[in-house]
Length: 162
Image 1 (tube, rainbow, N blue to C red):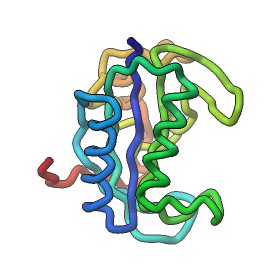
Image 2 (image 1 turned 45 degrees about the vertical axis):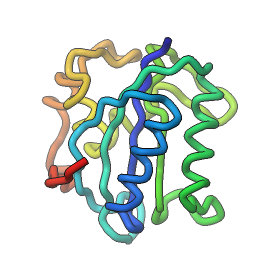
Image 3 (image 1 turned 60 degrees about the vertical axis):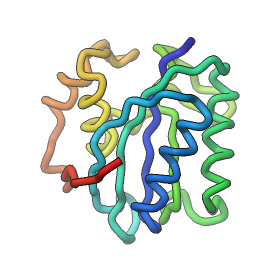
Image 4 (image 1 turned 90 degrees about the vertical axis):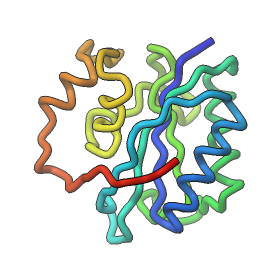
C-alpha cells in the first residue's frame, strides 16, 4: 500500500464538481482523508475563483496507474485538455505525493512542484499531514506552511459540508 495525496480543484460548477470528484475518488480508492475546502483566485489566468482541497488515501496501484486513474476521473467529469495550461477546470486532480517517491518521467513529476509554490496546495496539505516531510526539502508541511508568504495569494477556508 502506498499513501498518496491528491490536489482537487474546480472553478466550473465548483460545488457540484468538488462533490463529484470526492465521490469518484472514494469509489476508485476507498476511504479518504479530506482537508477543508478553500476558495482561491485563479492563478495564471483571469477566471472564476476555485474551490481547492487535498485528499489523502491508500492505494495498491503503481504510481503511473494511479495517475492514469486520476486522468480518467477528470475526463469523466468533462475536463477539457484542448485549452491552455492555465484555464478554467471542471475538475483538476493532481497527484502531489506517492509515498516519498521522487520521479520525473512520462509527464509525471513527484513531488509535485505546486506544493512549494501555491498556498491552495500547501495549506490543505499542511492541514491533513502537518508532520509529514517533503521528500526533497526534508521539512514538514507544517513548517513549510508556517514559512510560506501568505500575502502572495488570497486563500480562505469555506464552509463546505461533505
